[in-house]
Image 1 (tube, rainbow, N blue to C red):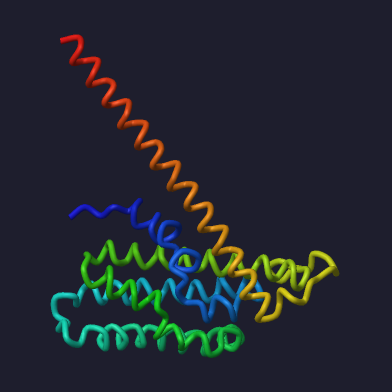
Image 2: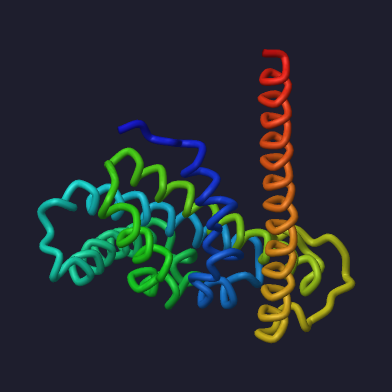
Length: 221
């Protein structure tokens, strides 16, 4: 079976973006996006867990009994989350403290469970690995963009570098997180609808052009 890399990439990053389109993983999205780097750190952890769990679930998809597939998926995901926690605790304890409670919550992150259930359990290892990679990238981009906007407006900084002294503390608060997230979801939905409408118009124009050509050929005959 041929792996459609372009479609998997588009779905993970744009069409089915977990942050702005599917609105999954909202706990870390709202809590950790006070700074852009937090989004990158959490995104990298999720990418690692997504790829590893997707690959293993795909390998075992014909072995795991259907009746216990969800508990099995959770166990596999929890194993890789534990690996990430141990590695961070040993090599990067400060980062482990920053991610805090939201790192172990990756185990029940709807993004990872959804990809395990809907994709990895039904597709090849390569396709599942790519799905994990691009879905994780989509999640990381969402968190990083939100974090960057909130950091600039709320702290007058970007990626930890001070830009100016002016700041709006509202954007560093939980209310600011909800507000910013809502604005981004609305913008993403609006832009997506415009792109989809443009795509449909192109298909319609091609269909009309094809019919006209067929009519011309019929008249010539």
